[in-house]
Length: 141
Image (cartoon, rainbow, N blue to C red; front, side):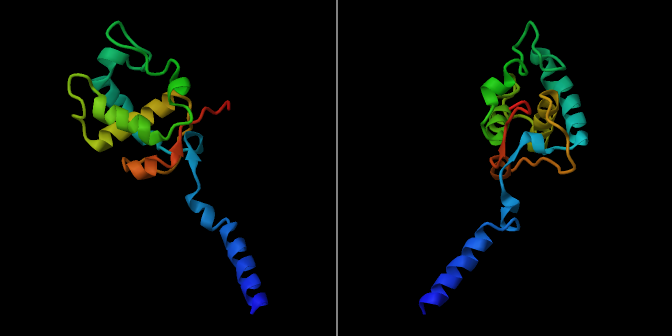
């Protein structure tokens, strides 16, 4: 009986370390978590809803601060859900939370592109549980 439990323990440990179970492993924004199409749509939305305060490149204007200056200092090591939640509840200042969730995720994708994160083949989702599994990380670190 003792050998059976030991054998089961070894099999369980092997399964736990298996790459098949690691599919849900944490990602960073450097893993290509958005598509270029999303970032392009986000650029259009930024022009319509954000540029007045932040400029088209999100580098600031006389009316508002830069989003990109110190981006990784402010958001680095945090889950992407934090950035998305902030944008989708606080912006734009004249209509906080007034855009559709897909619009906010497209704007998030554009911000990631401006921050130098590579595009990928998977569409970024507005699901905050999924976004919480993606860490904002600078490629230099």
